[in-house]
Length: 314
Image (cartoon, rainbow, N blue to C red; front, side):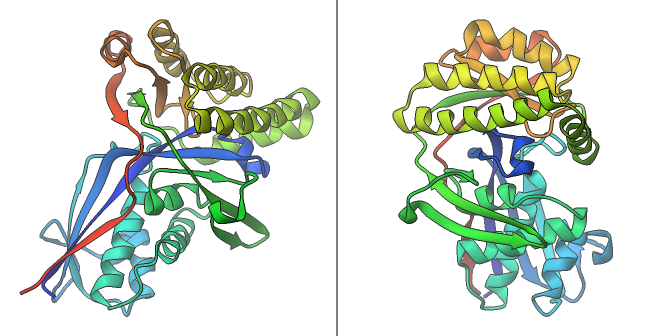
C-alpha cells in the first residue's frame, strides 16, 4: 500500500440547532462540498509537504494516538469553507480516521469512524455532539434524538452523562443555497447564552420546545418531499432562533434577501456568524440576492455519500 485517498462531505443543519443540546431532535444533511485527504507513511509528520508538530493538531494527534502514532505525510484539499459552520473540522477528523485506519489495516466501519472522529473533536474542543462527524461519515441525511424505526437506527453514541441516537433519513434531491457571512463566531458562548436565557425565562424554554416540535414536523416534510411545508418550517425556526439571540444582523440580512425567491431560509449551525441556508428552485436569484447583501453564496445539492476511501498500491 503506497497511498490512501479519502473524502467526506460537509453538512448543514436544516432544523434543530441549539434545541438539540437539551435532548430535542435535530436534522443534518450532507452536501456536495467535500474534504479531501491523502496519506502515506513517512519518516516524520507532514501536512502538505511541510514538517509539522502533531501536537499543534489535536484532532490528528488524538486519532494518531489510537493508531500506533504512525509518522505520516498528509495532503489536505478542502472544498468546505472553514469557520462557516459547515462541518470542515468534523470532515477532517473523519477523513484522517479513515485514512489512518486503512494504513493500519483496521475496520472501516462507518460507525467506528464516526465515533473515533467524535472523540477527536471532543478532545480538541472539550465539548460537542456527534452530529457533524456522524453526517460526515454516513452522508445523505441523519437525525439526532428523533423517533425512528429500528431499521433506521444507525448507532448510539455516549459521552459522560450524554447519549445520542443517530438515525438515517432518506433525503430527496433538493437544491439549497448557502450564504456565508464570512464572520466566525465561537459556538460555546452562543450555547451558553441560550442556556442562561432558557434557565431564567419560561418563554425561552417554550421556544426551545417549539424548535423540537418544528424539527419533528420537518422530518415528515422531508419524507414527503414537501418543499413548501419544509421551507415554512425553516423560516419559522429562524425566527425562534433570532428571538433566542443567536442570529445576527448579517445573517438576518441574508435570510431576508433570500426569502422572496425561496420556500424558506434560516441560519444554520450555532449562529452569530457563519452561514445561512435557503431552500429554493431559483438558485441563481438567491445567489444574486445574497451577494448583493455582502454574503458569499454557493449552491449545494443533497443526497451525497459519506466517507469514501481509495487505495493506491505500489
